[in-house]
Image 1 (tube, each protein chain N blue to C red):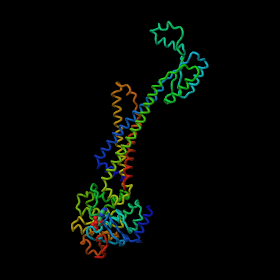
Image 2: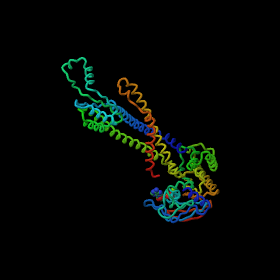
Image 3: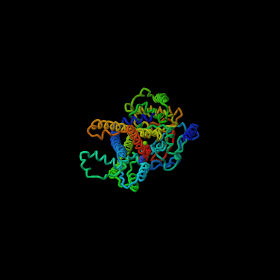
Image 4: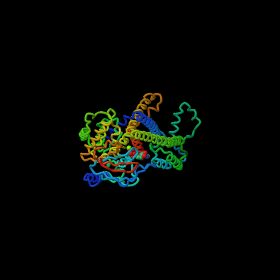
Length: 238
Length: 288
Ligand SMILES: Nc1ncnc2c1ncn2[C@@H]1O[C@H](COP(=O)(O)OP(=O)(O)O)[C@@H](O)[C@H]1O
Ligand SMILES: [Mg+2]
């Protein structure tokens, strides 16, 4: 398993494959058609947005990428893995290539900022003595070095979101997925979070952000894919 | 190891649930241990019974010397027999006379010796099996020169069937309690697993393997079982010393009660095993 994993990862790094690829993907929940015949590609190193009103299917699209759900029709691949051919026991290893940022943060409330971030590395079996330094540099990236011993609930929404970004970052993911990352934040925090994403992207990490907030995308010069009622209706750079 | 730390943290967080499980397990293991010790002592006491159990073979007056030799040889070669004593007609009479010293007049009217010569057979310990003893008696009865046989066959039979009943019922109790305790650990771990659902979801997203997520729950099940076992073992020791100290002088059987120490040390490990088994069932049945 791990040899295949390494080969996949390395070839992913070598840019042989697209980072994210959807081919004629459909997904239906009961009677709701959440995604209908979606086809698109995201290049390695690209930063792109999934746009659309609430209920358009943005979260569903991301769920297919982080293996929380399976497509009914079509193929999805990420970081060089074709998800349909992946065994369930390999999911954990694929997820280690992906960084997650959610609207509701998903931090462990009973653990310190340090432990929340270190968790990513502990899960990978990294030695404790190597963890410290990596956590420090991830926190530096999001400007939260001084909050290392705080608990999540004592932090503001913007700070909590920066912790989750650091938690994703510390695992050195090849791709980051963000679902409404600024959904719970005010405009000031919105901007700072988006700036952090841009910095991370500038260092080579592919980033896909789902949001209904047009202001996030405006003036970035990045590509936006518009979903409406489960269909990909428009792609443009704005 | 990180998994162990996770398990410890989880135990601390769910104090009430874990405490209840530990107490239930300790009660269960305590009862199991008491049942085991009762059976153990009954077995041990009855093991010693054959030494106190004698069979007397009366020889008729027509038995010749060679008949006696033959009987003696047959008895000596039987694995059931530890030793035999021969009591002649004469020594039997002497013995009777000393026993009835005060009523010597009984013998005044008797010229002939009315008593039989006899063999008293002492049985080997550890061969205490009613079936073998029975067939032994029938075999000896057929020997030439044997008048009759006296044995406490009825007593033997009663004890034997009592033991059989005890074995069956204790096996039942044991199985029931073992299943119950495994079920307690199973349920506890399952509840813990669901209570940690949100956390586990995050672990999954961060790339934790199934094993990484599950192992803390195995530790936790084991820890609950082990803790219950330690408490049960302490209880057993306490109860034992309490009873022997208090009642030794009043009820003599308590002084011959025996408690094998290795079995007390074993109780926590039985708990550990039950806990891990329950936890393994619980996590085996979970979807992720
Ligand atoms: N687990 C689910 N079960 C049933 N319906 C769902 C589920 N997830 C999403 N949906 C439906 O799929 C559609 C798309 O949802 P979602 O992807 O969350 O949209 P968005 O993130 O763009 O707001 C919605 O109509 C939603 O109700
Ligand atoms: Mg959504």
